[in-house]
Length: 454
Image 1: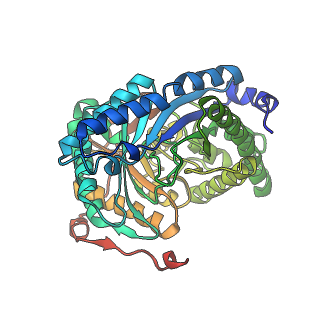
Image 2: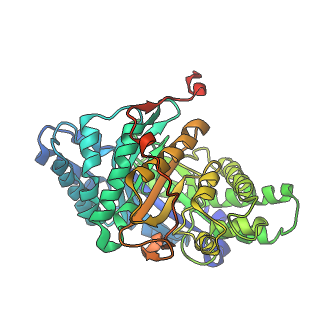
Image 3: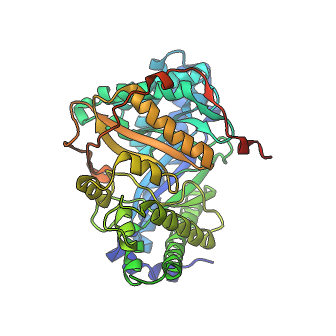
């Protein structure tokens, strides 16, 4: 039984080490909102979200006050909208009306984001999927709180290269439509391989079809807590290093478990999972890169970085699963560039490039995340980057993702400011050699042979 005394132990973590519950996310099944009448679909969606989630924000604030643990975001994830709107939507513009309804519902209940403007096209793309995907640029340009994701591959099915090629074009179009805000729309769009059904973290969150009608998922963060713990064992053996990370992850996860159970009880919604992810923020002392440097690297990106990150990711998971029977989602160390001051410093110092970040994604959560690239980067180059990252996920049976922002009008050496948790980022150079002949082939990259184990 978890009690308040366990939380009291974390007071110093909260006050001095940037521990927070990053998000309480309510997952909502919208399949029963489907209809052939678009107006009816929009009405049902708005009513269901505003009914189920009406107390989500106030409940999160109450729990934060009572337990003294910051809960940074309150979010909603929904059934992939390509499934909900399939019968009613005949054009991309029809889907945009749903996006605006979702945005209005999110504003009504007061959440920070709503995720699930999504399509799952890992093996094939229905007409409904394609319409939704083609609506994404306008949907993100005309809303504030919508997050969108597209799953283009999996270990079981391979990689849908037709979808990969299309997503390169969609990212470029989204950048253009939101160029007045430094192409901010792309910061709310992620392309995934092996997307989990229960991820509480944006922009890749959606409510899986295998989930309950409504659930509560909690995402916990705490890079600063881990770094502080490691400072006390500087120079010790790998065994001591690993034990320290595990014990720290255990304590962080217990906080998340308490918050999740309380939110579930007060909202009358079943508890789903705890996602234990070291998700950084732009705040000083809340950096995954700083942890890697505390482990012994001069800068993130130095030789040994991938090994250090693999160690960190594994020990975080081992500590977390001892603290909760329902650890899920992504759970690991995130390496978003713009949201991590240590990563930004490493890019500016020249120790970190996209190719090294790609290597690091083999061993962590989730992928090439929040990376600003030149606005004139070709769509096929972006598709090639997506294909590379999806291949890592497919072969290694892990979730990988790409969230890159081609900032229209800006190039290498310039900086883009996104604000808030999204931070700021230096524009990173991209390999200029052409891959269009590869990307423009039609069809699907087959699944690797180990996917046929049953």
